Length: 371
Image (cartoon, rainbow, N blue to C red; front, side):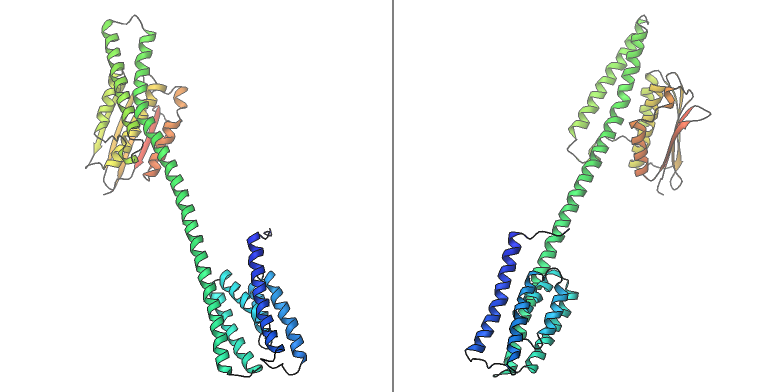
């Protein structure tokens, strides 16, 4: 799509046209007042004026074909004096709008063109001095164009860098939001599911013995208190780096299982781990077990649950949570929790799978354990 000329474009092009025309008028005036003799033959002067006018007119189209127009004007300027103004403008345009690998060879051709002109149409006076002056002017025009070109490239690179930085910041913000959402789900989901189980037991069995009611009420109170504490911790660090969010370790898995047993679940824990589990690996394993127990409590109440942690350095760590009862609800646990676990495991370069098996419902993950 062709870009419309702005007011600035019109002003710049008009100024450059007048500049090129002024150089031509000054040269013509020198011929008329006798400062510089008329060329021989005389008709060459008329041809030169026409070529000079055409060279000035190229100012209006120079941006569309800068290199092509420059080469044409350089060829003509080997014998035409009045094309010098248009040639200088187009030389500057090439330096501004084309990389140095293109503009510098064009500049070299302009130097050669000027040298040829000085010997094809020698004027009265010191030819060598005029040649040096002409080459110096062309060098200044080329240098100015290169300065403008590199300044524009610098502005473009800074703008691109700013755009990339903004995109990366948005991506990091999105990742932080996702991480916070996963942490809040993992931290609060387990506590709230305990509350739901015990509150449901009291609702459906109001005639339960006083000791059972008191025990359930105690668990509800403790779970609610702990949930509030966890929520305060998460909210309190929302503006902190993600690494400062409340983070469990492998040692907390046993506490997690104990809480589930107190909630009435039949959970067995087996750990066969050789060596000290790294912090990140332990945190991911904890979240996997936590999600497995929460899903079992919600979707397979009364099921026997087995938690198995095995592994050693270099071989990896395997986390398995299996419940022995698969219900229709238990087959539809692919919610945000499991999705978040899949993302966690993928970030750790591990493998994650879940679904019904011959034993019941299994949630299994393998995580790399560096040696």
